[in-house]
Amino acid sequence: MIGAHYDAVVGSPGADDNASAVAVLFELARLFGKNPPNIRVDLAAYTLEEVGMSGSSVHAKSLKEKGIDVKAMISLEMVGYFSDEPKSQLYPLAIFKLFFPTKGNFITVVSKSGSGSLVKTIKKGMTATTPLPVKSFTAPIRWAGFITRSDHASFWAQGYPAVMITNTAEFRNREYHKAGDIPERLDYKRMAMVAIGVEGAIRKISNTNSYQVAFK
Image (tube, rainbow, N blue to C red; front, side, top):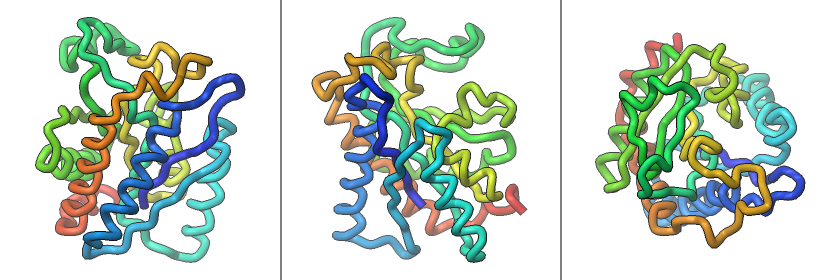
């Protein structure tokens, strides 16, 4: 399952948050249409992410009630803004600077503790197919201020394995939830790299079962 929300907060054009991810979702549809993977992949566009992830919550609950197995859910959340400027990347805690770049020129795979194997699989699939730097981060789910802030959290609530792929939102994009979140600020070349990387991740997932043990 790959999802992206198409709503935006009032007063913001929502180019990075989250039209960038919807564009990548459309590109993935084109890529998979030309060369289908050997597993089923559903692409979902969600409404009301900005209102408690309401759209994805209904979807995830419906899948669970029907007994449908979801091998992995990838939530695309703000994947269009990048910067090569020094100190363009901020973090919620200063200690993060010891382990992550200070330039906002990378994409991040985020999930909760215990899902490291899935995160590693996705990261490997992305780095094998795109030159875009890919970082990863896992943390306890109580870090709700960051790791639960997208539609993947709806799938966690139903017991499904899930990750968020993001440019880290307001920790990089200073126009997050503001009127300045416009298409002219997006990096379309790197957005294309995200799409190709996610395609690679899906093909990697389709060829491995090693991470599933962590979710049993």
